[in-house]
Length: 397
Ligand SMILES: [Zn+2]
Image 1 (spheres, rainbow, N blue to C red):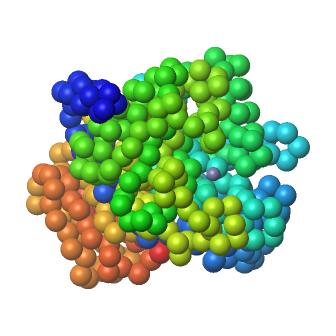
Image 2 (tube, rainbow, N blue to C red):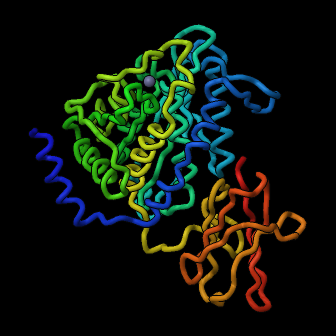
Image 3 (cartoon, helix red, strand yellow):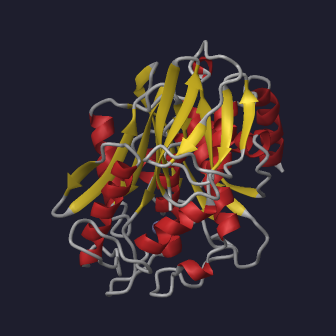
């Protein structure tokens, strides 16, 4: 009851200052169940990956199995595919945290971490770890995908920890190094097992405790849940458990929360077994928790609203967002373009592709529906008088 009153007070306080931000809403809309599943099929060994040695299955991400290092390679490849320069933070004998960074444009020294652990249990040759914590890892990758084109004041760090199951070793190493360097971490959003909802009640949990701004981060998550219309039933654990990587940051005095399925009352029966598989996850539920975590990270990173237009990520005159894209893409003309100029999608030979639904969302902005396109590389063209505006678009499989 006391918690409920606090929540109402916090909502009243924050909503007045935190109106809905269109780029955050767009990012949350872009969180895609197919994209989550596509990656988890590979991370959990159902579909082979190719990191340069031909097709291989990631059968176990347990620290003592070869799939652990293979997964680390594949995760770097995924970040690189999205345009990030992936980084490996080595620790101990063979530990490897995998990270990607999106630097803030106003306060690059302030960091917001969205994270999960990629190692898995049990110890044998089969440890798919789809829920624990493939669900969190694929959501971090999805965060990188949907937030790549947005400009933030603070730096966003997409972090995938190793050796969580050996005692939060990878995250503890990172948090201790950050504290040792006096790094300013303003929020950590940890996802660990966010895909299982056996009783179908939709309930999820946020673990927080009065360390630094952890309570405020939890309040921000609750605001995101209402402001962006997610409407998830959320239970709060305060003081929260210390059984996952967020606790490594609490130990160093940083604010952190854990986003997790209802592990208390509806635990995944396949937890830490060879049957922790994708087939037991509820993808709609999983997507909702991913949206909550991604929205919270985006709000804590503070979008640069005045930028207005999505960042032009090297696509020439046309700004295309997100890119690569799967379902829909937003296309912006440069300022000063005539109002009757509209984008056309062509194949690489310049032939126009038919049946792409294009709708105007602003005087210089368009949404294009890519759902009918074969995956691959396309060109976007718009003829503005004598000037030809172009851009390159990749449609995801
Ligand atoms: Zn876990």
